[in-house]
Image 1 (cartoon, helix red, strand yellow):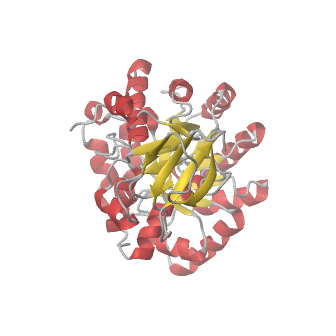
Image 2 (cartoon, rainbow, N blue to C red):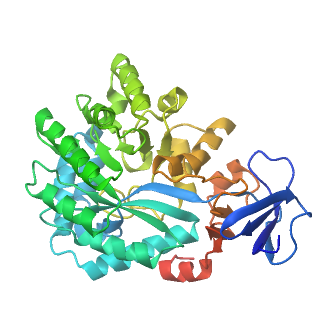
Image 3 (cartoon, helix red, strand yellow):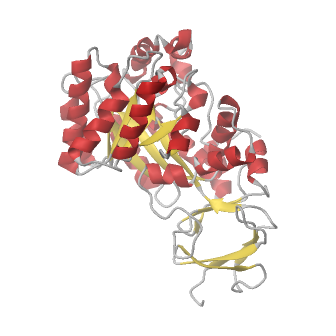
Length: 411
């Protein structure tokens, strides 16, 4: 054990009756021993607080954080009102933020959001950047720079995202290829924004063509409106099966699912399972949401995302995934102890699996991506959604004081 660099002592694991010592070496969990028997040397005392895997945010529009002040409330009202029947109008209204968006301001806002993430124990994020005739690829460029800047603190997966459509925005497919060539990690689409079912299919096909060319995963915002006739979740699952992309596809939102008739919904579940397609839900950002309970009960991987931080679609947010789970507990009426455990999984292990992160669990040999909480139970962690006492990314202890200052978090 000479290579051990740090030991977290007196840690309580989820479901573990007795405290343990967790030794970290070479960025990984080296041992898990009964409390008081772990390796000597440098360490921290968890004092009986929970130690869990760090938090994962599989859905964040990082290129738009803190832009609400420049837009006003028009898009917000359209997106969240009238049963989400005007969601497309909201997206069209929100597009104005990209006209003349300053790359330096985008980077500064993104830096603040990532510092918040680190402070609140969120070490992995799938971050979307719009790619279209208005934004070009500057959002992707800004996020790639932030990815390098925060490497080892908050690990970013950058999504080149066709927010305003592909058929509706000619040339976007070319820009998506350019963005992937610059180093974006994931191809992102939003097929429901197109005007016809045929155009939606074309959009899905274009995204999978680009994904195949770059051997990349796919994320798509699907059926994000109060229209039970939207079927792009099905389109994406079918495409994944046809292209051999099982397990490399993530469905975001799928809010229209709440309005689907049960017989169709049951068939959709079968497709999602066959395609090994995970679903990320953000119930706090819109009045409709995916049918989380039923999906999870059927075996579909379901996780939670922050989605937005003070932008055209959501007024709040601070990259605190415990807060996201706390809100979901209310909105989904998931407050029994098993529900709480599910919600905690949905911001840790399930979220990691949804974006292709392996080994995000507390086991010997796995990467030491950990948070040390003051809370002693999951219920307490959700109730107070307080910042962790300590955060580790691959064994590196994050300087939370520095992140606090960078994030400008109010007292």
